[in-house]
Each structure stands twice: as C-alpha cells, then as structure tokens.
Amino acid sequence: MTTIAGLATARGFASGPVFVYRGDGQVPVPEYLVERDRVDDELMRLKRAVVETKRDLETLISVLRQRTGRSDVRVFECHLMILEDEALKEETKGYVVRDRLNAEAAVRKTANGARQQFERMNDPYFRERVRDLDDIERRVLKALTGFSSGAHIEIRTPSIVVADDLTPSETVQLPRELVLGFATNGGSTTSHVALLARALAIPAVTGLVDITARVKPGEVVLLDGTNGAVTLNPDESTIRQFNDLVERQLELTEDATRGAPAGTLKSGGDVPIYANIHPGVPLAGIREQGARGIGLYRSEYLWLNREMEPTEEEQFAAYRDAAKFAATLPNGGEITIRSLDIGGDKLVRGISSKEANPFLGNRSIRYLLSHRDVFRTQLRAILRASVYGHISILYPMVSCVDELVASSMVLNDVKAKLDDEGIPYDRSIRVGAMIEVPSAALIADELARHVDFFSIGTNDLVQYTMAADRGNESVAHLYQPTNPAVLKLVRMTVDAAKRAGISVGVCGESAADPIVGVLWAAMGVDTLSMSPTYIPLISKILARLTREDLDEYARVPENVPPGETAHEIYDICHSWLNTKIPNLDDILI
Ligand code: PEP
Ligand code: MG
Image (cartoon, rainbow, N blue to C red):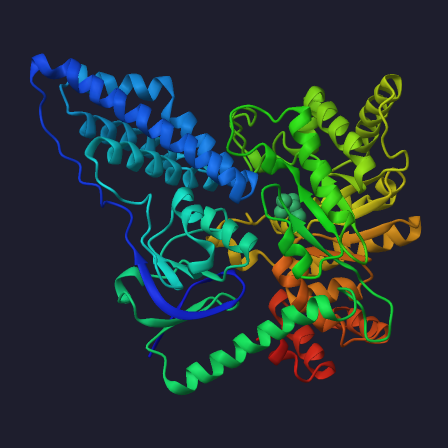
C-alpha cells in the first residue's frame, strides 16, 4: 500500500478504477522540407486545417452552451481567438513560405514560441493559459494529421481520471457521470481542473508527484480530496476506514438540506452561511449544500478569458439570473454582487495594464474609479437586475474613505440616470465594503459611516497584513489567518461594525476552515460565506455549539500568552473545540 500526498483541491472522497489519460504528446508531428513548388499547396493544407478546427470549435461551443455554464464556453471562445490571431497566423505562414517547413512543424514552432512567452510571464493566471495554447495546437495538428487525440477521451466506466494535467477542453469534455475524481501531477488553484472540480463537486487532488507513472490503468485507488491524498493498493482495513469516511461525508451533505438552515446554533440563533460563486458555475449545487444565498458573486469572472468587456446587457442577464436563482433558496435568498475585482492575481486581457507591482497597483475599486465608464455600466446592470431579487453591491479592495465617497457619487449618478429613463431598481439596495486591506480595518469606524455592511476578505487581508503572496508556495508558511496581527484587524472590524450598527461577514476561504471559520463566528461576525462544498461541514460544527460556547471560544485566542505563534493559536483553538465537540475529528474526517 502506498499513499501519495498532494494538494486538497476539491473536497470529497472517491474510490474506483484509474483511467490514465495521457493527452499530451500523442499527436505525432512530422517535420520535413516542403518542395519549392509545393509551398502553395502546403499553405492551403494549413488553411483547411484552421477552417476545420474553427468549425469544430464552434460546434463544441454550441453544444457546451446547452450543457454547462458560460465560463466553460468562454474558454473555447478564447481558443477561437488564439486560432484567429493574425500575428500567430502570419508567423506560421512565414515558417512555411520562408523556411519551407511543413504545416505541422510550422504550427508547432509558432506554438512553442508563444508558450515560451506565456511561461516567462511572472503571473500564475497567464502561465495557466499555456494550457489553452496546448489545446488549440493539438486541435490544429489533429486536423492536419487526422490523428485523433484529446478530443475524445475514451472513458467507458466510472473512473478516477489520472493525468499529468488537463487542458480546459479535456476537462469539460469528460462525461461528468463517469468521472469519480481527478488526480493530477500538476495543477494549481487557478487551474481549470481545480475550478471545475470544485464547481461540479468532484473530489480532486492535484500536485501529486508522478502519479501518472505510479498507477496502472484499471487499478483501484482511493482518492481523498478532503485531506489531499491518493492511496494505491489499499489493504482491507484502509478500504473499510475509507468507506466509513465516504458514508459520513454523504450523511453530512444529506443533513445540509434536511436539518435546520445552514449556520443554526445548538441554542437557536444563527450565523447564516452563504456561498461564494462566480459566473459560469452551475447554481444548482449551492442549493444541495444548503447555502442560504450567495454571499460573494465574483463578477470579474465575466471579464476573464475574453478580449472584449461584457456589455451592459450581458452583465444584466448574468446578475438577473443569479439573483432570481438566489431568491429561490430557502431561508435567505440574498445575493451580494461584488463589483469588478481585477488586478493582482486576476489579470484581464485588454484592461489590466502592465504594472511592476500589480498587487499594489491600480486594481479593484481603484481601477473602477479611474475607469468610470466601466464602473457606471456595471452599476447600471446591477441596479437593473436588482428588481429580480435581493441584491447588495460590494466594493472590493477599499483602502480609504475617499473611495467610498467617490463610489457612492457614481452610484447616485447612475441611479439618477435610471430615474430619468424610468427604469426601475431596488431603491433600498444595500452597499458594502470589502475589508481586505489592513488600512480598511484600521479605519473601519470611518468606513462604517458610508456603507450598510462589511465583508471581510481574509484571502487578501492575510496576504496584505503578512506581506505574503497568497499564491506563492515559498511563503505559504507566513500565510496565517490566525496570526495575532490578523486576529486584531478582524476584531477591530467587527467592533467597528457593531458600534455603527451595520452587519459584518467573512467571505474569505478561511471561513471554510472549521477552526478558523467558527472562530470568526465566535468573534461576532453575522454571516459566513465560502465555497459551497464546505457549507455542510461548518454548519454541522456550528449546530453543536451554543452562543455561550461561541463567546467562550472568542476568548480563547485572547487568553493565549503574548508571543505565541499563529500555529500555536490554531492548535489551542483546535483543542478547545475538541473539548466542546468530542467527536470533532470524526466530523472533520
Ligand atoms: C478575499 O480576498 O478574501 C476575497 C474573498 O476575495 P478574492 O478571493 O476574490 O480576492
Ligand atoms: Mg480579495
């Protein structure tokens, strides 16, 4: 028996036979010199392959539009754009005409050049786009050679898909009903396989060293996406323990919709739990997990993977549909739409400018205030959608009062224009500020005068407080939600909200960590919002605690002697929860 550790990318368990997918490198690339008088024929062959690829992609897009969410389709729209990029086309033709390379070799040479450019970029988002390039290259080569690969993944029985990494088209073309889980050598948190796995609630473990070489097709493995491990050749007792975990996870999810609303405490009262989502994710899953509503709608995903900005109509339709859906959720039904949060790790082609320090640059609310047309269009779309549900607006990355004053002027202008045009909107729409920069927490009292609620974004708050890039593995040890400095800023924010009589929630992923999420609830936040698959877990823990327990828990880190590290505080909190909930570790599985 061998257990390989990896990244716990998407929660859940699966056991089953392995389907090893070796997509890359399967298309043979012949390389030869074209006779001088055959160059025109070769160009024609290249042209035909591009036309055929374009047709295939368009068919795929129309099929996918019916089957999956919009963001999946956008990936292929982006592939179409790469395919039709004039500069790339000219470069490829040049290799045929000037160097008399055959079409396949010319395509590979162009793709290699573009790949090197992407890989040199110091940004995980763009590095991830190498996959898009691989994908489109493979399609064109397939059209040229007639060699079939990648487009059809011959998976026939329910299996755990093991791969080096998966391109977007490979991932979305896998038949959902036959995929029990994903296990990949590569993959990061921005990889398509990670995003899709979480959105579709398929367990996934990524970053497994050499898994493709270590498994045999058909052998049964155990995949634990909750803890990030894959076990090969499991013995009888490991299988029994694993099945027990699977059973318990199932019960947990079933409880999520059967029991009291998510976030209900043992003593009555609650800390309602909402879902973090982005456009393109099938919404139905969040109902199954018991979400009360959508606590964070990351609107910037409407901008990713595309050249043109989404129009007002496109945005309106997306916000309206999400708001209508949220309104059907029992026990809540609100949706908080965050205005465009680009910059930093979320670069958008065409509008993210090249900056030496993008994490500290013209991003999020700063970008919107310096591009008022973009801001106005978005606010207009949100306001128009607000009559279809219970929408709130959330401004990202606020760092000073001026930004809120300026934003509210823009909002008032947009409202006045809608009034002139006789277009209805929710006149009591609530407006909030993300607290994700230390300065915002430090001046929370002043900010609270300008908004109806705070939403604490711990993903960024931790990064900016600790000066530790949230995506950089080499400083991951400094990324500490329970660092006393972070705890202090959260406490200041909560206290300021209480003094001002406004609500405060946490929408950073730390809310999904049982020890930390429950600590935020104990420290007095009114709501939690997280990836949907984690809602049943946090809900189950809260259901075992009374308000008095939470009050006591809030004092635990306060009573930790000064000088203790974030890890010690985490462990002390864990132990305290263990004493209150003796079977805590069974729930955490
Ligand atoms: C956060 O920073 O905690 C947050 C929720 O925003 P995002 O992860 O989208 O930056
Ligand atoms: Mg953030």
